[in-house]
Image: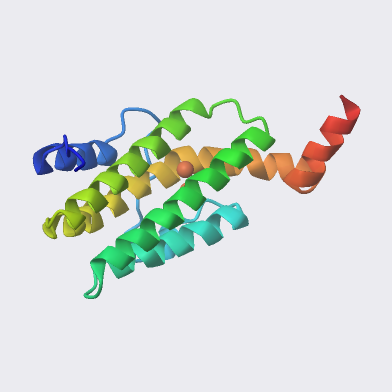
Length: 175
Ligand SMILES: [Fe+2]
Ligand SMILES: [Fe+2]
């Protein structure tokens, strides 16, 4: 049987650390009419990322509603594996230099979601609500710092050479 090393308190403290990541610029100020219930708040100005962020927003919203929480956690985890993996591929394909801190934040996020799923499967149903409460705040900060910087870079990169795939193929041929 798997030895669950982290206590609920420890998981909560990891979730809390997500809310105040130690790296990155200050998030932009939220307008009075913006809330985490509004998917436009997660928009970063690069349409492929914004589409993924809207999907994430909808899954987060579902997590706070009644239903099969285990299924919703699984859907959120699968989404985040794809979401983080896609952004990391974009970083590599576009040779984005400032990627280490961003990837570390993704790794921490995925560790927390994995641990929350383990705790939920072990009978701690309250942990799902903690995640539903804390993750939107963490994501505001992540989207407005790490993701926004990547979005700006990808926008410039796409302007220079069309799609990422085309640009990468061109550079490979030129090398
Ligand atoms: Fe993102
Ligand atoms: Fe990200």
